[in-house]
Image 1 (tube, rainbow, N blue to C red):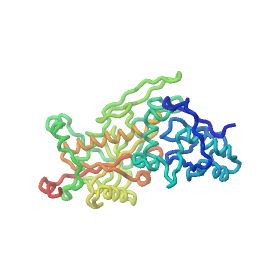
Image 2 (image 1 turned 120 degrees about the horizontal axis):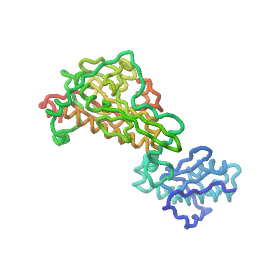
Image 3 (image 1 turned 180 degrees about the horizontal axis):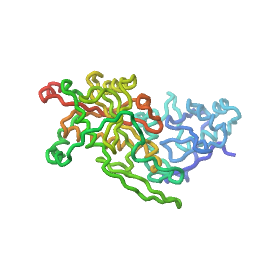
Image 4 (image 1 turned 30 degrees about the vertical axis):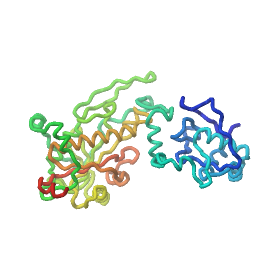
Amino acid sequence: MALLTLEPFSDYFDTDAEAPAVDPAQTYKLSRFAYLHQDGDDTLIECPKSYARLVVQAPQAAAAFGVVGKGCTAEELAEAVDGLTLEGATEILGALLHAGMAEAVDADGNTPESQDQVLRSWEFHDLLFHARTRDGRHNYPAGGTYRFMTEFESPPPVKAVAFEETIPLFRPDLDEIIAHDPTLTEVQEARQSVRHYDREKPITLDQLGEFLYRVARIVDFWQLPLRRQGVTKRMTVAQRPYPSGGALYEQEFYVVVNQCDGLESGLYHYDPERHQLGRCCGRTEEVETLIARMAWASNTTPETRQVGIILTARFQRFAWKYASIAYALMLKHAGVVYQTMYLVATAMNLAPSGIGNGNSEVFARAAGTNYYEETSIGEFMLGSKLPPEQMYSLR
């Protein structure tokens, strides 16, 4: 019985080519992008550089994974793994070479991969994420498969949540906005990240209400009929001012307040259907950390921050329909939301700034969410704009 089974999954894998011969005197090393994981009852070795995967058929093959990762000859591999013969070690190395998951080590201890500047620029998780969320380097189901349709209901488009304290928000007159807003071109040309605010005149609750109304409110609902594998269901979808794949709108908006005229400091959840805020908590230790993280990410100080918008994703809402590409689409949606927030804030003469990173663990603890069910994927800062002469002096 083979220790490993090679499974090509791409037409680009040359099935006619002979497996590379293993040199007994040569040291071989595993690609740093190769990984071993469980998929159902199978133990697989995969690599985003490869056009084939390896199915582990014996425990010695799994044990060999760690040994080859450090670099070894066939003889050294056989000696390091209990129950593995020299013939078996040669078979494992040959399979790894054939799959493109291992390379020969030169006299200086380098592999072609380790000397490749382009590959060195990729981190393991980035290349794997890229390969698994695009077609070409895998053959797993991808796209709108509605993979859980026959197993459980789709999570609703609006998060089911109740708060002891809610704050109704200002609803602007859209006709008035249309009549007086600058043009799209003017807004695009004026858009910029602004991280310094007018501390004497902080953003107001009404401005925050108008901002959220123009960016994130739910405009409409409708029912989408679905039929898969003989099962018929109806899925509720929605419409908001920004686009979303399948009209699913998995995003939730939270507002972390340091300084806002008319609103106490703390963490709030935005209800896009009722256009109101629900108070999650006051200025807890976790909220302090969220404010401090935003300040650190923008190279400013916590006391100068006004409002932060934390964008989360309800993963199950989106993964119910989409396979393989769900998280990648969520990040694309975050980018769409960032652009929408930038344009709306600029049109309102507010100071916007996107943030490149945040602490999802701290957010989950602050908001009391399940890290795996709803996790933060983006942060955005908002505040009042300084007078033009003061803005110019900061450049």
